[in-house]
Amino acid sequence: MFIIGELFTALALLVNGVAQILYWLLFARIIVSWLPVDPYHNIVQFLIQVTDPIMAPFRRLPLQIGMLDLTPLVAFIALFFVRNVLVGILVRLAQMTGS
View 1 (tube, helix red, strand yellow):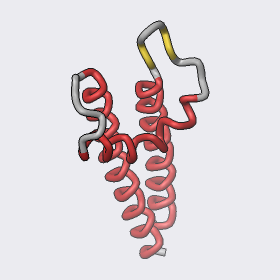
View 2 (view 1 turned 30 degrees about the horizontal axis):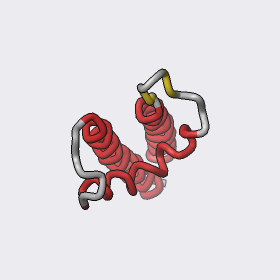
View 3 (view 1 turned 45 degrees about the vertical axis):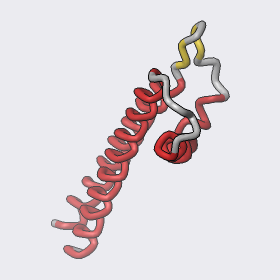
């Protein structure tokens, strides 16, 4: 059972690391959206391609207030909660199977 606990711990660390990278990429996209940059630049295109799947479910919701689009903020908060719940479950499973 010790090995299964270590697997859950490793999976929790992996999920946490991927979520942290996605946080920073989403944050970068939010900052870039405020700046006058070329939307066809390679870095901007990379940010769009990586973060669009995260923001796509929220695009269907009415999250625009005038000129302000709250979709990235809601996606950021949702990613935070999903990460905390998923990592919390994996850590608890690791503790239960590691004992």
